[in-house]
Amino acid sequence: MNTLHGSRPGRRPGRLAVLLLTLVTLLGLGAGTAPAAPGRHRVPVSAMDAVAAMQPSWNLGNTLDAIPGETSWGNPPATRELLHTIRAQGFRSVRIPVTWTDHHTATAPYTIDAVWLDRVEQVVDWALAEGLYVVLNIHHDSWQWIATMTSDHDRVLARFDALWTQIAHRFRDAPRTLLFESVNEPQFENATDAQKARFLNELNTSFHSIVRGSGGANADRLLVLPTQYCTPSQPLMDDLAATIGALHDPNLVATVHYYSWYPFSVNIAGGTHYDATARKDLDDAFARMHDTFVARGIPVYLGEYGLLSWPDHFHPDSVERGEALKYLEHLGYRARTAGVTTALWDPFAYLDRTTLRWRDPALFAWIRSSWTTRSATASFDKVFVPRSRPVTDQSLTLDLNGTRLRGLWHDGTRLVPGRDYTFSGSRLTLTARALTRLTGDRAYGVDATLQARFTSGRPWVIDVITQDTPVLADATGTTGSFTVPTRFRGDVLATLHATYADGGNAGPADWTPYQEFNKAFSPDYPNGAIVLTPDFLTTLRDGRPATLVFHFYSGATVTYQVTRSGDSVTGTVVS
Image 1 (tube, rainbow, N blue to C red):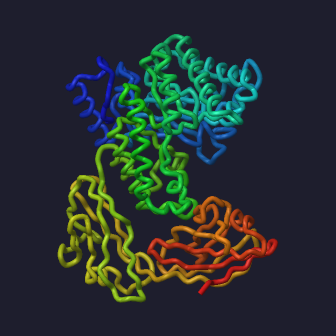
Image 2 (spheres, rainbow, N blue to C red; image 1 turned 90 degrees about the vertical axis):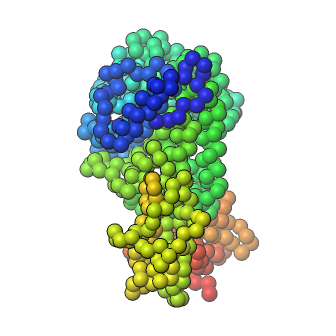
Image 3 (tube, rainbow, N blue to C red; image 1 turned 90 degrees about the horizontal axis):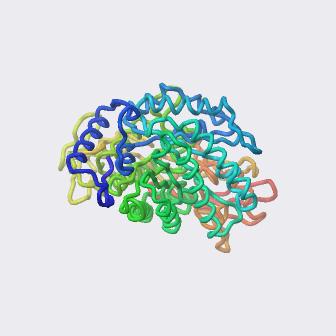
């Protein structure tokens, strides 16, 4: 449950009520079973308490928001069994994004297709029946036609109003466990900052007026209002706070999204680790959410969070796994301390919609743990042992996050302190003796996987890897197909630094020498190659050699040179 901070006088629940709500929440999360549906009981009167009861939340992404229809982006149709699974896994609310563009007339009176509205209502009703709070919105319409408000103001507003008039009427008798969100990630083309603020205020206030005037349960239904783009920057949150303050309605909720510091979220510009810069970005964002809204008695629903390019089960990991786990653990902690309810964005990456099983159960275990407790992490989740040199001690730094180390385990056997490892302060050292045993015949790759276990939270997994500096080879190809033959020798590719002799950056991201993982380059471990993508190759200056430095997570670097001549590309190793 979220901690309640800074409620307005008279809105703070009594101490006993807080203790009881906390106990119910923790028991529900621990058991992984659904209590009685909130829709059949009185929702807390306080908006702050109601949104706290929605923690944690999950997005039914790439489904009813897919374009043009529910299955267009690869997910099967939503089922009640899916929503039952979500509830059974400990989620207490679900956000159901809906794109309406292809399901209503594009001219007045902007009538929603009856079959589509029935389908949306069916999915909403299933979720409510499973005991989930539900957030229903207008989603990708934001960039499809709402964004043209600058040049087509009256028609955009009329269309927006017509949609919410019909949605509000259809759901006017739904229980208060259904929330409406005015619009997802609102944006406006060719507009000044002042115009953007004015347009969003106009949409939010019009939405508020329409829903409140539609009667039934809509009279006091919780309404969710976004910042521009759902960005948690201070000026945009200040604009939203002003709108909420002017509406004088205690049943309003602020919403923003958070996908981490951009270079880390997609692995560009050297963002290979969840470092101090990325941590500060998150700390600052949640502090702003708390201070701007929560401390003033306005609940915050983090309508989407995750990483922009991870997990992706169809491409090599662009974000290193252990670094992603640090981010998710940190986010869960900061959300709790800030009093923010979080909704995991899941387009397909976490829950397999066909099997209704988590694609990566260990990853979900970390996310689930972050709802209630802290987990220890380490400076990295890999220990590299060079095969070309004698085995020596290797160390990691632990971030205990309030826990205590219980010990290390390998294949269910506890390692011996003092002999196999030492721990002093925050420094964990694996001895040469233990590493010699664990690496065995020293074949390249992962030779052993250890678990560092702690007094609470999840264990930290450490791969012991035999490695040497990768070896690249000369190659020829075209701008449409070019690969660098690579013997990875146990190492893992982190990033690519690309420049010209004059110091200019080479590649599509011309603002940084460190190009984006999987966009400009990608490792092909099974086939022993590094792929340079057409997006990267076609941006190279004709006849101007580009120097590429491949960085690996062991710390090794290898320099390579590529030259484009028309559609032909040659690559050579730089000794």
